[in-house]
Length: 102
Image 1 (cartoon, one colour):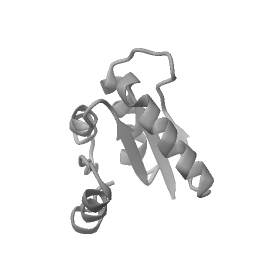
Image 2 (tube, one colour):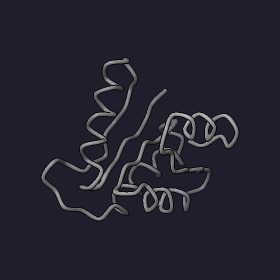
Image 3 (cartoon, rainbow, N blue to C red):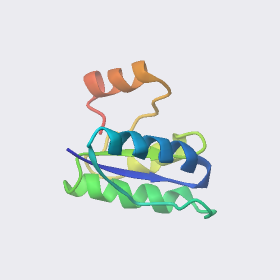
Image 4 (tube, rainbow, N blue to C red):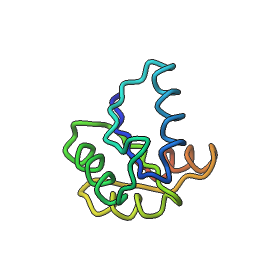
C-alpha cells in the first residue's frame, strides 16, 4: 500500500507525527507538502495528493489542515475519491469499513 500525505501550515505538526508513525510501521508514503515554515493554501496540497490517489498511483491519502474540512472538500472533487473527516479511531475505522473512504 502506498499513501500520499499532505497538509497546510495548520496541519503540519500533526502530519509530521503521522508520517513518523508510517515510517515506524514500514508503510510506504510520499509527502506532498507543506514544509515546516511555509504559510500555504490548503487547496494546492490537497490537489497534489488527491490527484495521485485518483490516478491509482497511490492507494490512500492522509490530508491534514486546521479542521480537515477544506482538504476533504477539495479531495472529493476528484474522480473516485471518498474523503471523510476522521476525528478519532472509531470514525476512521467506520469510514473505511462502511464508506470505503480512501
